[in-house]
Amino acid sequence: MNRTKLLWIAISLILAQLNSFSQAIKGIVTDEKAKGIPFASISLLRLPDSSLVKEQMTDSSGNFILRQHQPGKFLLRISAIGFRAFDREIDLGDHDLELGLLQMGTDPALMNAVVVSGSRPAFQRQADRLVVTVSGNQFFKTASNGLDVLRKIPGLELNYDGSLQLSGRTTPSVFIDGKPLHMGAGELQQFLQTLTPEMIASIELISNPSAQYDGEHKGIIDIKLKKDQSIGWKGMISTNVQVNNYALSDNSLLLTYKTAKTAFTLRSGYTGGSKIYRYEAWQQLANTNWMRTRNGVGTLYNNFNIQLGAEHALSKKHRLEWLLRTTHNIRTPDAFGTLHTTDASTKDLVSVIGTDNHSSPSQRNYAASVNYNGSFGKTQLK
Image 1 (cartoon, rainbow, N blue to C red):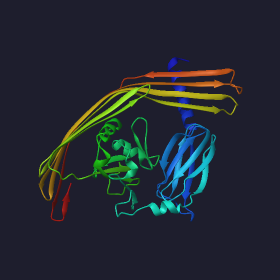
Image 2 (cartoon, rainbow, N blue to C red):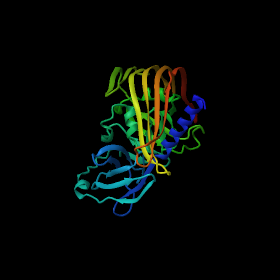
Image 3 (cartoon, one colour):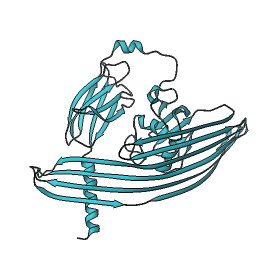
Image 4 (cartoon, one colour):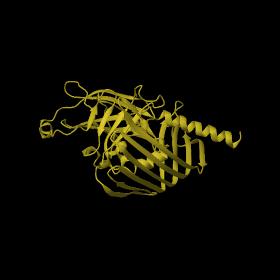
């Protein structure tokens, strides 16, 4: 058997193990009247050190699904405003875990501490969408940019490669103020890093778009930006640095100039450095042998993007927008993996399969767009 066939067999085995180790923890968080509690915080902590493994929120009906790749003992912690914290120890094996109804008791002290100020609620369920208020929302106070905001939204997952998933199954299209952004995962990630939470008024999640949208959009994330009425110059520079065994920096620049009828916007971003994604799992096979899976992807980044746009108010009913942008993504990923199998005693080695893949993909995109919005009587043109 040649080396190419052996490599493909090893990769297939690793992918199969990745899928087989993914167990789901499912449940419904309810109050004392068995009514679902929306947007409760769900945390999965590893025992005995209580290190955080995963965190998300329940949906509008109180349902949640946590996917965990490694078996073991964990603490499931649930918290919600107006309720006492709920903790349960769970033992996750190689099958999905159905927890059923998880009832939280009300906390009168917390209920009385909640002040209704007349502001918009943080989360609103409308007919076909979930509307998340971002600006002024304490839930996003630790977010440094638009990408961090999306990480915290229930039902939305950000994969290690920058791609998005809505409700765990749909790759959504991203819109800005009702207009689709035609960008790849890397380009979109860099664009979102130029947005701050204060710039975002709200985000609408549409898991099943209606007929008013093109059929290509299986799910939609519509980011509504705040309307800035101030005249003149405004700028922002931000840097996010991650340092451990590897160092990665995300840098962005935003510069705007606005007159009474025209607004110019310049955005630029640069990502440089490296980071690594690791995965490990341990499983006893049907023949009682033990198999350990170890793999990872270390990636060196040298990404740059810039875009220049303008919005002109031709009149009260007519607006013209144009946009120029370019993105240069240069990555050097180094993927590696091993399947290490021993007998039932874990002392005698049965087999070892290893893979190592080096590549240097690069991507350069150039785009231009023009949008016109106007109305002639009862006729609306876009």
